[in-house]
Amino acid sequence: MSRSHLHPIPLHSVGSQDAPVSLPRPLAVPQNSSSHTWASPCGPPTWGLSCLLALQHFLVLASLLCASHLLLLRSLPPGGLSYPPAQLLASSFFSCGVSTVLQTGMGSRLPLVQAPSLEFLIPALVLTSQKLPLAIQTPGNSSVVLHLCRRPGCHSRELWNTSLREVSGAVVVSGLLQGMLGLLGAPGRLFLHCGPLVLAPSLVVAGLSAHREVAQFCSAHWGLALLLAPQVLIPVACVWLISALLGLSIIPLQLSAPTQAPWFWLPHPGEWDWPLLTPRALTAGISMALAASTSSLGCYALCGQLLHLPPPPPHACNRGLSLEGLGSVLAGLLGSPMGTASSFPNVGTVSLFQYLFLQAGSQRVTHIVGLLCMGLGLSPRLAQFLTTIPLPVLGGVLGVTQAVVLSAGFSSFHLADIDSGRNVFIVGFSIFMALLLPRWLREAPVPFNTGWSPLDVLLCSLLAEPIFLAGLLGFLLENTISGTRLERGLSQGLLSSFVAQETQMSQKSREKAAQEYGLPFPIQDMCPCIPQPLHFLCPMPEDLGDEEGGPSEPGETADLLPGCGESCPASSREGFRSK
Image (cartoon, rainbow, N blue to C red; front, side, top):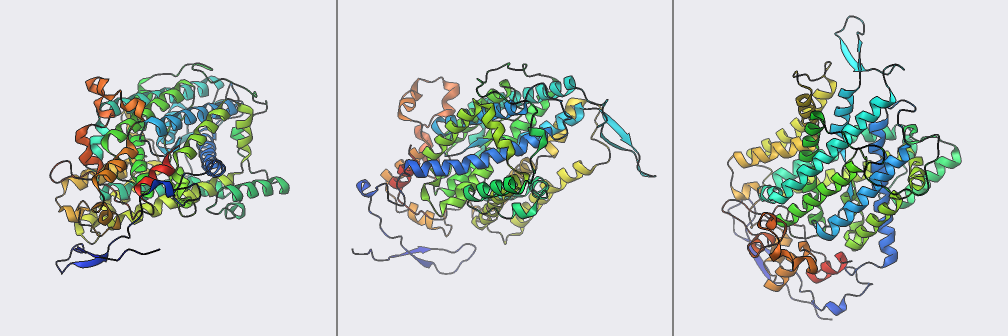
């Protein structure tokens, strides 16, 4: 078999005025689609491999769900809920499954698993903590410190049920706001102005934001937590079995119930009671929507980078956030205290297995995860079995996946001129303040008080959201401090093999890459008939420039995250992402 000759491509190095350097031209890859068989490295995965990869994603999702519910219910006194916690967990599984199927099929079209995240948990904790009674404690001669009252007379079942109903109302509000933002096209417009200096700090902070919770879970037994390896399935099963054989009861009691949950249960709105909409729930929902939208846009860009795809076009971002909002509305109506958003830990799982299986980012895998979650949501008894996962397993799984997100954030810095004083300030200030403000708010001796409770909830929630703070500060500084396109990482002259290959692609290949984010053909044919206010959800002819990574207007570009090289041709990418 003959090999293609190498031809130099002249490219100028970043920040240098020297002579152009010569890079080898990428090897020509045959485009014959018939050569892509099931055994091909870039071919579609077999059903057996798809189920195995789906089980990996499901274990990460289950760990995230159990951890988020535990963190919300850990201060719940015994008998505080009027229904088994397993049913609460089952409703969350069901809404996550529905949202995952919708997101992969009609949303951003990226293989993103939908799950609750810290962006929903933090406002929920703020809302419940301000709802519960406080007790005054004066340690020695120090100042007065307020803390949650945990005496038997402080809590009541009605108080806790009302608090959870209020959290569900905030989830519904956040879903409605996200859906409205997506329909108006706001996410797609903002995404065009987000460069590497906006995304990289957000990813770094996202990887660091859960370190306290991970340490708390792992501290139950560091030996078991350290047994976990990047391959999630086998270590989780082994640690789970070892804990059972050794009789190590490291199971969160807050998720267990004295009575057995039913085997079959059909989730429906108003099962326990309808969500409670109050001014406090409205402000908490606004905080959830803003933080979850920031996190999801980062997930879209990171997932596209890992799969060596072009950056998501505006219509894909708009559809993605709209359907995430629909999933959150469903979750809130079902009584779940957590909404749905694109999961950073599951994106980290894709990165871990991308080196072993190029099909780790297949849409078929994500569809199986969604269907599995929907099936588990119909059986609270099976969902209750997952609550027996030991705490070190939860901490180990989240620690491994969050570390991958952290490293992805660091790797994104090379896309910009990191030696520039402007960029050093933007990156350092965004990360530092995003980590400083939540810590200051958490350790303040007296709760934040403006005199109006809804405003307190809004400010406390937003100031405690590290990802939102990093994204907001990075966005404002990046778009207000002057800098060249090359300095900001927006130039098309970057030394990237992805850019070098993109310049060689034919127009047909570019159009095929643009179809990665397109709607399914039956729905695509209906786009000309949709009302004008909803045209942001469909790809339009003028969007071709954005989908190809070209600038939409002078000084700006949609090429947020050029990939680090393509390991297979565009036709193969479409194959392994297909169902």
